[in-house]
Amino acid sequence: MIKLSESEIQEKLKGVDGWEYHDNAIHTTFEFNDFKDAFSVMTRIAFEAEAQQHHPDWSNVYNKLQISLSTHDAGGITENDFNLAKTIDLIIEGEE
Image (cartoon, rainbow, N blue to C red):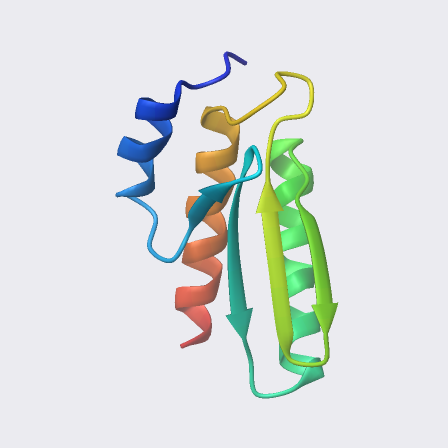
């Protein structure tokens, strides 16, 4: 994958709601009703991430899930990151 330029990243951020770019990754945070709901979503994301062969850096504390996406092999943000971000957003929308 080819690393995206700063301007390409900023343009693509318009297509993913709630994601921000800093520290060479795109980031978002989700809040759920409880730990079970957060973990359930993480499980669905894990299956999709495995299918895409692209895995998030994430952390979970009780009902909050923080996700960071970056393509380490490319040294920055690529299309893979935005594809996974869109998939994650679809999973979250299914929860609402």
